[in-house]
Length: 601
Ligand SMILES: [Zn+2]
Image (cartoon, rainbow, N blue to C red; front, side, top):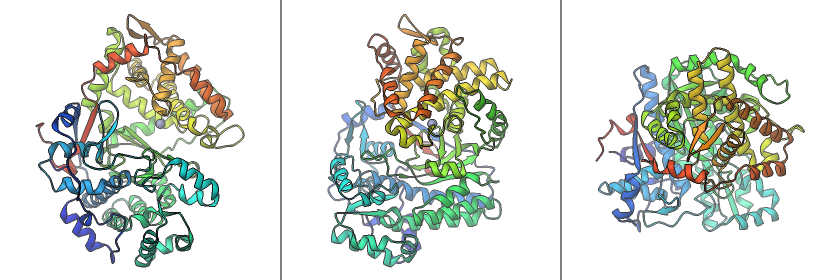
């Protein structure tokens, strides 16, 4: 199995295609020193993790692609492989060296599998701790996007004393480095060698010349060599699809420029509002902040290459005709008019890179409120994950262990698919700012995400009820969606407060218990489908009211009230679910990237 993404020919191509090449922060992969890197674990530590790891091979059907699209796929995979390395570099100072080391050691199969699983040299163990399996430093909250050794306290103190520096230091697309002479000289040299970056970042040169203590380097400057390579691949892909899908080509060209400017507005606008007529779509760039353990503001690189499922996408567009009815049925007072031309499509994954790699079921982007308000958001449903048999079997085992025998088969893959679909659309509906006009993020801070995700879950279940009333889905389909709504909220472990998804799921679990949608019987749960719709409406009413009030204290009190975890109830169910578990982790491989599936060793 080909595990690592960087081949020798790719490195040569990169060097040949880049303009005069300055040395950047680890941007010359072939120059990365792997000295001092060696295996840190024996088989006794590696094997138990791999024994709980399933392998998922995605082989999207590419037979409908035009020759131009096939060329674009090759170019975008080359861009994705480079972005994957950038992601590895962002997450750990020795990440890229570790990748190069394992590339040179094909015999270290276990380590290579762990690296593939973890996108780096730090793995999550079965005890939910994070450990290095190679001889590299432990993970720190600074990752490799703030200076090594910096803590939140030191950074907070610096920003408090230098408030004018906040915007660039906490920008979502800058790397913070120490303001050493070497770092300063290097960044200025990058601007000298690549005037395009100088031009696209007005004021940057002066900042780099004068600022003390820390420097905030735009990603395109910090990773210049890689970003220029990726940008060139996107332009080449655009050329290949120009004749058949001009709107997609325009998006790719704008994104190629966005990456050089570290400003995605142009590409995002073209992406969200563009009428792509071909078979391809792609999420490209640094969007999600989950990997920034210090401030949760720095975005990490990803690329998802997707092929459209035309039949399911068309079916979906039709269902959106009912979206205003769903909005009008939500339990709050509003005369909000929602657009029915939401750009939503069903896709199969050709290959995922960087932060996007894994078993994500759907994407909704961009995140920035001002962009979403101006252009909307695009929703990409990932069909070959949502409807994947192996993944469904694992989630079904947990559900069947938690509920009474008679309800074990209420869960269906299709139910999960539609519940997830309407969850994403749910982000478009309901309260989108506080009554006094503030952004929900600003008003509710660390509770904003939790409430927004819970709202989307509950809007999804409300939509299912309305689609059923309208005759668009059958009673059996509705039951599958409702069962999926219950599966979603059951937890295998007591959530920590900083885990927004798990916390809001526990809130729902407790709410359903108290409002009779769930009953605890002889160590199992019974779903009362009759009382379920009212329980959903009641909780959604609370959530929308808290969002509208924008009151952080009230939000926190609500979370506190609904997150109890009883050893004689939650823990009983959680234990049953844990005991049903065969796989904890998943290694995903892709036909277009890794070749045909390998039979298990
Ligand atoms: Zn969501």
